[in-house]
Length: 259
Image (cartoon, rainbow, N blue to C red; front, top):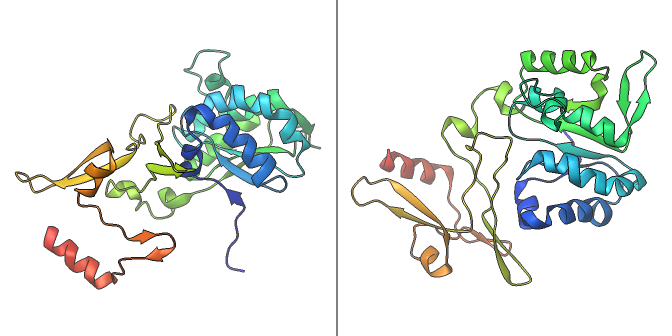
């Protein structure tokens, strides 16, 4: 086996449940889609601290009743401050305490032989990107100072540390912005409160046009289907079928023409 993973959501899954139905999305994931085993849920699509302080207490009984672990995944902001707390925040606030301390207050746990607190086995936390050696040391030291063992959190390096050539290197990211449920269109987006605004995504149907003066592509979001159809976007994949099949050589040649 080269690699393996657990069941894990990403932002488009959470967005499709819509912001006012986010807690229902959490509940459906842990009771219907993945009623057992490990499931990692990205939790910062809109308001990470609302997930921690409101949703999880409401879902506590269902989480503890599962035969498995629900892993909460913050994905924006400073990972050190998110995990162990921000001393510049208002004392006593969730931001001040940090995610691990908040989870302990909700779910409790056990104490290891060395005297460190370990969260209940039904709940955990993962920060899957942006972890450097320095940040890891800060996180582990902060956990130790708070009396928590390192097993409470899973840390992932991601491309941020592995090679530091990321989607942000070229200012490029791909996100779902529109979907349909039972024939009803939904304009979806992410806007994490723990971020500085750079992770806010476009919303709904998008029309792409080339500016006649500058020659650069520009976009308009929250469009209707008529506006979208007049733009530069082309359907590549639909209903399980690849409609446009281009080789890497063709893509490179097109890029050369537009540089």
